[in-house]
Length: 398
Image (cartoon, rainbow, N blue to C red):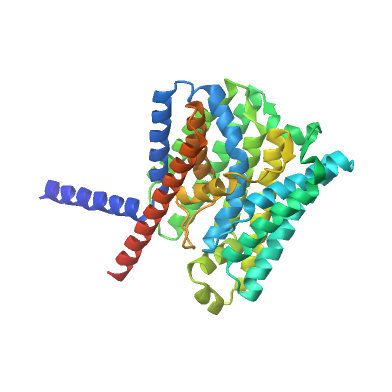
């Protein structure tokens, strides 16, 4: 009887795990498995894909998209969309470059000015959306066109401006020694372990969790990934500053989203705006603040992209940047319907999208194929999100 009961319990646990997998409760596992498959396919097609040099290039390539996606995550948590983030990133980078190169501003002041441009645009668009009730899609679509025009106006007749200031170019072209890389890796592991331990103790105190198995597995997984990344990067040029900037923003904004009152308000408004309003939350203020975050992160991403490319031009912030910045978090599990997701999906999604783009570049596939494949992956992610949402709703009605 005991063995039969144990078998039944295991079957129940397996069905529960499968249900969580389908409903999106462990979406990160889906994405990690998908990423492993993507890497295996491209490595089979081209054995340079998993080389230290290419993986370092991949880390640099995803930085700008990842930073922009952090702001996109907050907007998606509201159940809204911001179609202007690509254009805002290009405009902010152009403002920084023009002030530094043509007007002699110090690199630090020029960078701050570029970020403030993004913040101001976010405040403006968020204010129009919340104050007048104009759909965010329409407001940001108008912004997409307007800020592209502003980019051309800022650049003037030159069309392209090279960046030569080492303080700006160093943002994406600075690499640290092996020793510094291992120190940063140890710091990441220790910080994450501390956060997990504190969370575990709080859950025990609230009677929500027992045992150390789950926390130990989480810390062990993060430790293995961190050690592996540090070893790979150190075997090439070292840990890049750009990656550290991205990780700092991911961890910092994840804390804001999950551990602060503002973050809880964002999830509440995205889950049910009317219920949030009845609970006393100033939903307009939350919406304006979220769009300001989106504009600021777009500007920061644009500045890192300009630093990596050593120039700004009329195409800065254009091409597929907007698609990638929105597609990444959605692919990694942030819902388009609002109220569900996490900031770290910006990093995981950027890895998936960046890996696909990088692998197709190594295979010398055409831009047409790249766009079709990326669009197909995004459509698949949206369909999975819709199915998971329907499953959760059906489960709630049972």
